[in-house]
Length: 73
Image 1: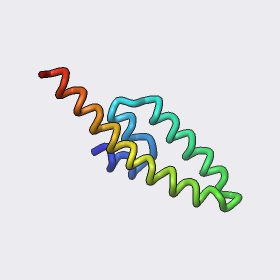
Image 2: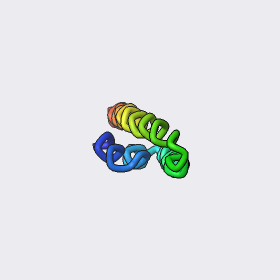
Image 3: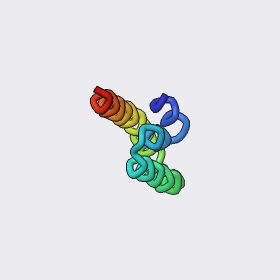
Image 4: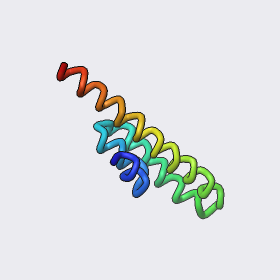
């Protein structure tokens, strides 16, 4: 689910997985890259930000689930 949310909007998956600071960071990078798209370079960086956001959302959700399971045991 976190990956799908980050596919829609970078940072949304991090919010879902409980890491608001990372979510804000990815959202801020998206805004900066949107502005840089007028200088063409933003397209490259936004693609990297988007892909890394999905990868990080998966890792963050896995860490969250592991901590949740360990605390329940």
